[in-house]
Length: 306
Image (cartoon, rainbow, N blue to C red; front, side, top):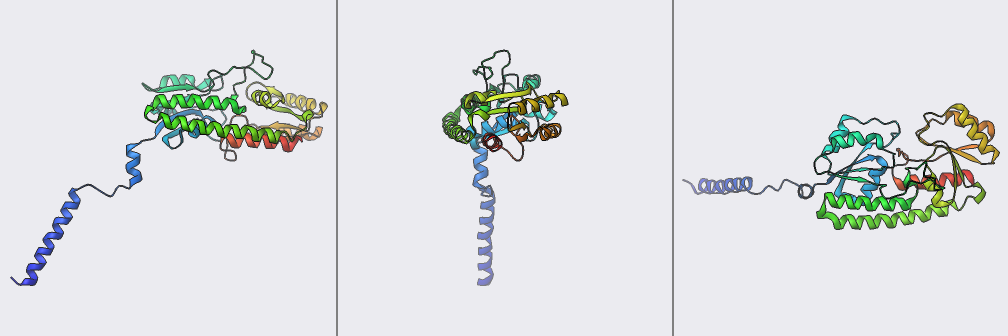
């Protein structure tokens, strides 16, 4: 056998050995980030609304995967859950609702779909259900309109996340403290913006009675057509609201994006009253987070009433 052929065979044998050894040894084809995801799967959380989902993400950060039953762009007052929502609840480690009769229409589905060992958090538990005047006959469940109440929500979420995922309790505590600091800054910013409105004009006229906690926090007055949503509002109700605003020389009344403002705008135009927009509970693709919603509301009130 020639030395050239012998050398080729030896080289080929070594190459074959290396190929087989590589194939049988540990795979290096999985990227590091995938390995990390395998080691630390995100905690599955279901929140009843997109607004609550945003708050939970602010506490849990990259450790959580949050699904909202009522998604961005939908109105919680008229939403109907889907079968896929029950599946998501069943697979969740933590389920978060608001309470205060805001999302009680989902309670039956949540209770029947909850998986064994799933942690349940009602965010508003521990907060008094009072309106701006302390009237117990009508509790306003839109507690988040006061950022101080959202600090309470954050602590509720921290406790729920820690119960569902004790190994990351320290991280959830840190996330909560960071979020509370952010909310404190948000509260100061809102106050500064609202200071631009003369005290005699600090009155919110709206369809939906959802701003009592906002008014109590910032020293405003509120008037609304209905305590729930605006589905039962008649044209006469709207005319009366506009006339009341005009009589009190209020510069603007406020609609919400999920409600059709057509009749309101027509009546307001006749009375010489502007129509502004504020958000109560439904995020959309213009205002996608709790903080964006609150800043938008403060700016809209200041621009329309100062």
